[in-house]
Length: 403
Ligand code: GCO
Ligand code: MG
Image 1 (cartoon, rainbow, N blue to C red):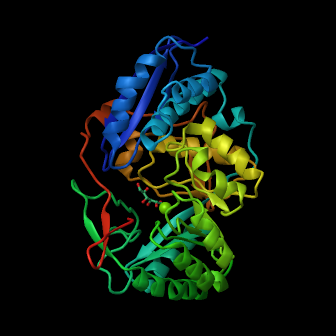
Image 2: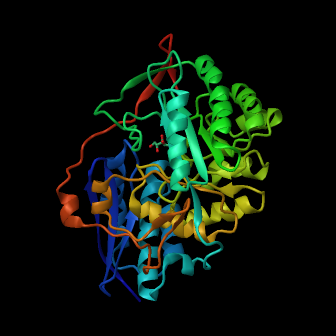
Image 3: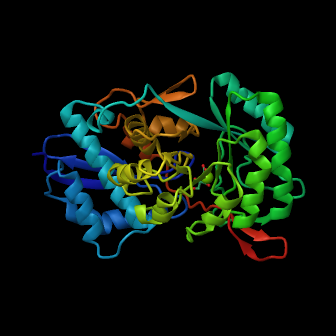
């Protein structure tokens, strides 16, 4: 049996911060796990280094489920993004080790491929509808079958999803949170014309997605869903905050636009009613923030029983190690829906060499044993951690709002 001999946390900032766990075994095989929690990175780094790693030394690296249960039940304090990201990193690293020892890419250990590749969606955005559509046409030319549309809102200086650089969107942009102003009324007026013009320009063969980023009330989201129905959106994401899962009942009563939620979820309990009552169509929980491959597969199985498909979060704050893990997951679960794909910068890709690839709007994790993603530790050491926060939102009268 491969015994865990050591583990360490690597924090690096090749353009943005990433936290990576490396677990080593006495058989010379190591595994990697992503532990990045945007804007709260060092909390997970400390959780791992101070509280998890000491418990791992000497354990059998093959006992993935038992170690998962040990870290989840054994902490007494359950769930939460910090705990679950730390557990996820351990879980990813152990699956990586198992795959390397077996000499198989991870998806083979998860039951093998259910499909030839994972359909991904790219991010088209712009300050105006015209700019967004121009950007979307570019994605269409690159072969994307699914495109997310985010556009500036007339009357608001900035909004979620619209980047300074068209191709790399990095919201965690300041060493103290940037303050943005928000108006749901202005926003609600701006989205239907975006979709109307996008259908005219892009046609009907491409899936169009949109992220509301938790900003509407349920009844407002119901109205927007209804307004967008003629343009057949693939999904409306994070329509309203979901701490109260009952919020989605109200949205569901008013629209047949498909709903996606869950990038901030960290456990199956965060989506139990949403899935059981079929209040959503896509679950966005992802490997790094929802307890790793082991727990995400549990969520996916439960979702499959209720016609809910997967749509893993895949923004740039999820490292290439997580992206690789997500693609093995995507290839192997029966109820896969779509995978988000935001390209990393060249600096990030150089720190994390990987085997996954993109062609014709689809991605494949590659056939290297394990996850097929590595870290160049020497290069990583050259990029020192830099504190970076996500922005905050206020309404025009100064009240705090959801970002
Ligand atoms: C998405 C997300 C991201 C998040 C970011 C926060 O759908 O890709 O909403 O853009 O805001 O990942 O860390
Ligand atoms: Mg989102």
